[in-house]
Length: 117
Image 1: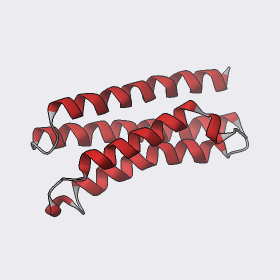
Image 2: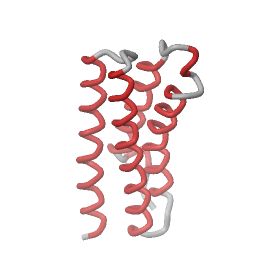
Image 3: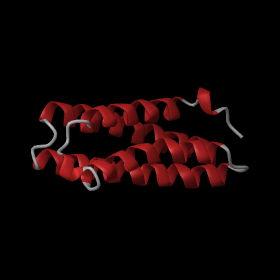
Image 4: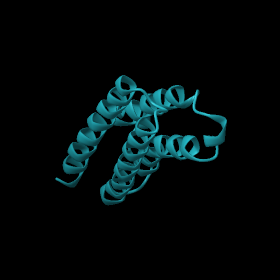
């Protein structure tokens, strides 16, 4: 339905996922199957759901997947804050990632509104 590579929201979600992977590379080994895995899955889920929605046959279906992507963004936000409180993620890196997430969420809401009008 949509040309995925032209969707700025998808491109920014990919960039966020890459930044999240870089930010979590030094997490402790005992978090490998815990918080590290959860954070990375949530980050990848954002762009993956945008991609899946773009391939659907209707705007309504696309909006549904954008909603799922937004839920993953909130999940990621929560996990990053927990990481910060556990001193696994420095304040400046947390703030940078949260800004990226907030920008994606704003884009997501605007895109959903545009699709439904």
